[in-house]
Image 1 (cartoon, each protein chain N blue to C red):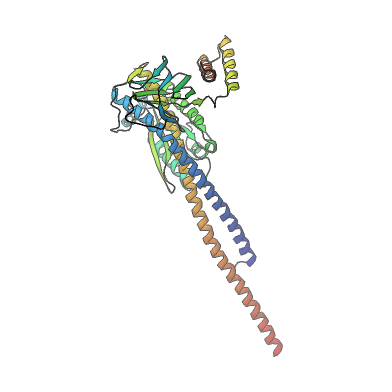
Image 2 (cartoon, one colour):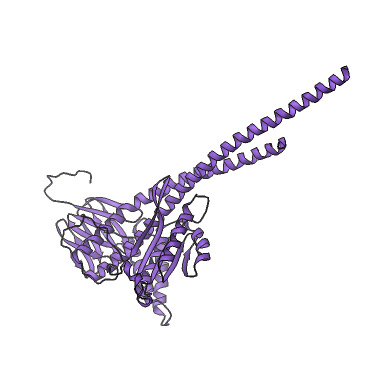
Length: 142
Length: 294
């Protein structure tokens, strides 16, 4: 939304998503839903200052007219008044998600978790599963 | 005086060399531009993490989190062998040569470092450093070679994960890095700095906001610390690769200049030789004609 009017009655939330290689977005929106460490939470303008880690999941940015959906894997959120900053290493828009690959990764991770053998790395398999789920959910809209 | 044909061959070969060095200069210039772009793109992320680390440290000055715990001081080296700090030294060089003193300067300061400290294990990033350092030390525990061409963040993260593992789980108390900092296309600075534990840069830019931490501060610091190391290593690799291209550009520019100078000299020599050959010929003809007319 280009109109940046200081007299606007309702304050808006500025969202900045920063990756090591680029700034993903830096714009204004209505509110954001973030997959936080302890569960999904919504951020509206005038939120309490907060720092939290992100778990793999779906990040939704609500803008007038259009919503932007991302699959996010890790990172941090800091909220400060009307600015929410997200720094993350891996983030994909729904267009960038390779659904077939995510489905295969999900299947593989599930198989690995199902086997009872000692020599598999459960943490890695679980992380892989949650990443693939984040990708799939970002497309299917859950 | 040298044979005319020999000189001519030399000129041709120097001209070829000149073409190669000139092309290398152009390539380095374009790679330098790309590397600089990457540095600029990484800046917001790095600056932001830096600010967060500083803020967290400022709010929790007495934290005993290993990432921020800075009780590993220089003086430790003076005390008995047993208590000495175990260190990792990361040496970042280039994979290729032909870039002036870029690699040798790094290797020299790495050797000085090895002389001054005991219990140092070395991690080599870049082929040139590994090739040289393996002659000087047996303590190379890891090496990452031949990747500067396709450098991406995933790769640098695999390095930083390894370093964090060494630091947190393998009992190393300190990790230092030696690398070339990109100052400008013609100037590189050798930087020796501590990567872990993290020393936040002293600065006034701390956010005064009282944040709620979720789940808790220690978890946040751990995550933040990991991300910080990730991006610091990424930044240093970018700096080093930009500096390498800069150094190569300068070296190749000099080489091209030298080649031009050499061609000029050889051409002069060639002309002289040709002239003296002609003079000799004329004298021979003249003296021959004289002999007949007598």
